[in-house]
Length: 405
Image (cartoon, rainbow, N blue to C red; front, side, top):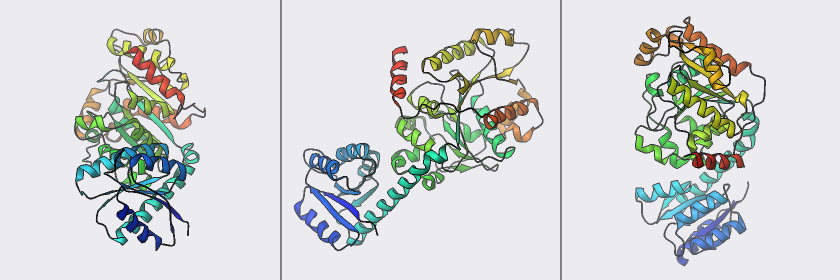
């Protein structure tokens, strides 16, 4: 049985002594150090790199919440159990946001302490095993972001039908992620009522693994799994880049394709999705504001060093009576339109209003065939697209966008 190395952090000498006595009776637990304030704890953690830290909330110099946040960022393989005399939900919320994996209310029993240590240790080891195989599994998975800098171009409609098409017509395991955090509507387009959404993952993303991920997904009758956007706009502010990156990486464990419906705002969270995407389907329409924004977006993506083959340009609601020719659009955007989706409002509008994807209700329509072409573009591609993930370019990109703003 592997030994679990534990660091005890509490400003009460008697408390440390009591914990030491309890743990000394366990053959699989070794105490590697003690500390009486947050600053000492951070230093001791760096020196000993324990498996588990028992961290008191209220300590001098630096409190336990602050110390936990530093340690979980610098030592991601060390897990923290917060100890507090208060069972207040606010303490628990702050502890989990800081990165703690469990919470013990003093006074606790010997069994509760030992169970908590073994539980968080086993979860972390399982997570590490999954992380070790993630890159290998990830190569078999693809992330596809549906993006447009202009609202109202049919982005969510395309994302929904593409996900359903890949699952039903091509027998793929598909996850659909709604990253339109303030006003996401993927659930409406699929007539779903999610019990859990992305908002529920905020406090638990550091312990996220494939099993936990499944608890936050809602299954559609076609087999696709949906991670819905937060239920209220104000929750969007609590979602971080790190959470989104972890969600997308974890989904690669169980799904061959991850379709992401992004926000139109080119901010950090949207960039996090675009960075790790194998393909970006850039949606535009024939109206001038949409085309202008698409051109600006292509310029930004070029400045951010996205490979041209990573970006597929999709013209939605393509119609010959809009006063603009396709050749004019290609010339204006300095690239060819990859797929032109016809304007078929009589099919698309009822589909959206009823929450029934048209790829199911009108599979033989021209608009459905265009969605299949998009699916084949994803599945038939052999080229390896460079993915700028967790590298220095991310910081450069964000700085670039701030300068443009």
